Image (cartoon, rainbow, N blue to C red; front, side):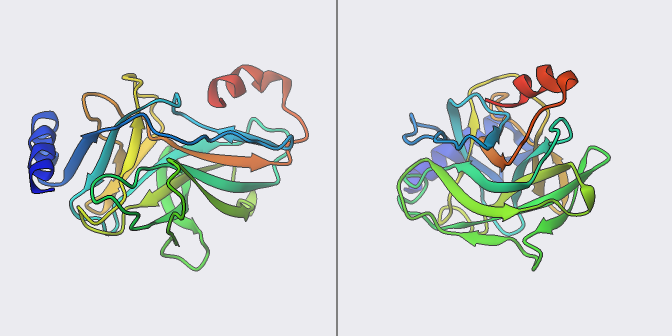
Length: 223
């Protein structure tokens, strides 16, 4: 493990000198599992292309969040966020699930804001029980106060190497919707060889219809 850790740190230094001491990366394998099996009343919001490229973890995991922003304003009716889906991998860096926190943040002025869910604060801890790469966290939560945009995110919690990584896809074009909260502030997700699209999705349900003017946008947003 020390050799793998040193190699990953060297790669991180070559890719992002400003984060050499903070971010550890590893080439992602072909991850098993599926994010499919939808109900008729649900739709998946996603910015990734379903194919992974890199596993990443912060050396210090406390208050280290990564997330995607989503907007449901193109949906005619919207009942609730049913679940969050996160691509993850237990075999790196320590061959075991350690668990992480998840949460939903406000998204105002094109910048992530305060934590909205869970309402108790601090994020909800989640420990995967299966080896599937797509982990599902049930929520069944309605956005408050007529909000239509939000950021769904995961917090690493634990320090490297006793942690679970996050995953980015293999699209080298940044779609501009993935974020990181590290060092006390939000900013666009930093890339590894340019790969910056976080493999984190949400499922919303009970859509009755779509506004005709939004069809093109919906096709672009949802896989």
